[in-house]
Amino acid sequence: MTSAPARTSLALPGSTASVEVATEARVPTVRRYLMCEPRYFTVEYVINPWMDPDQPVCTETAVKQWTVLKETYERLGHRVETIAPQPGLPDMVFSANSGTVVDGRVLGARFRAPQRAAEADHFRRWFLDHGYRDVVMPARINEAEGDFTWTGEVLLAGTGFRTDPGAHAEAQEVLGVPVISLQLVDPRYYHLDVALVVLTEATPSSRAEIAYYPEAFSPGTQRVLRRLFPDAVVATEEDAACLGLNAVSDGRNVVLPIEATRLADVLTRRGYEVHLVDIAELRKSGGGPKCCTMELRD
Ligand code: ARG
Image 1 (spheres, rainbow, N blue to C red):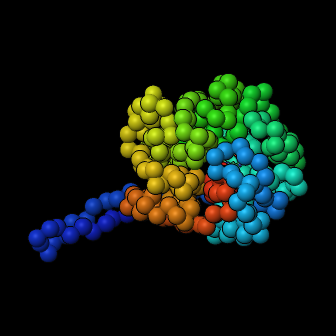
Image 2: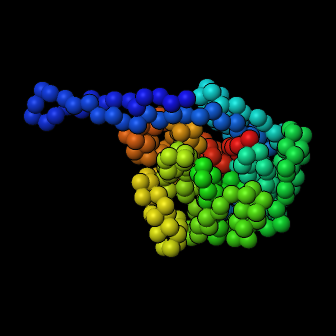
Image 3: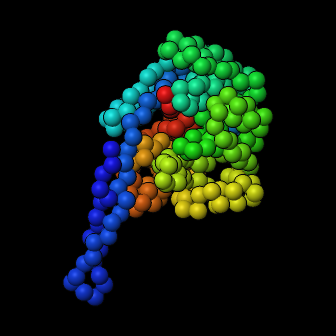
């Protein structure tokens, strides 16, 4: 379905006249997500600089915040599937790390940290129980949508802290999509999905629109990103430091952490509708809305 471009009325300075300019209407597309309730969420080990086991964590608050996130997606018309949380796997709430699904093909996960290793098989079984026939488990370290993001055209793939560069070639072969490797350099932004977000997917006639924090990437990768996405939203340290880039967009609605006010303003001015959620409890583990959300691209 296509809709007519929106028209915005602009006042002309020093005059009572105004002109009408066409601004592109942002069109949402319905998504299907896989989420895992943080019933057993804690911070009991340290595998990224956000995690501090001495800082108190309230599991009940995490569940409440996660529930609001899930209801936000449902209110926006998206379908949310859930997988049963498992005791002893406190990071299982971060479902984005456990699979990359493109055109119904699934590439599972292989975690770098032994503490998270068992999550991968629970998700593999979920896929098999839910009718996915094309499920491949990776041979290389692969933290799935933590480091892989689909632009509608290519798979952007992060490496540097978690996902092995060899997993990029594996993803290209298994999923049959072109992969572009991006080098992460700042340990606070250890996964691609805390440094870059796809706001609008590419179509046959338009490029994808993304937002990213340049300093999280190596100089060469920064040049690649400028070349591929000259119109990107360039995020600031302030946007990135509250995990503001760990956002979820359906092409019109962008769900992002409540602290990301500057980024929210920029997105609003670009015609997006922003939805702010409080996800502070999960940030104690280095996660935000996107980490809790695996997209099922069937
Ligand atoms: N504590 C988790 C870890 O370090 C957080 C994962 C966040 N997930 C993400 N997609 N960035 O593995």
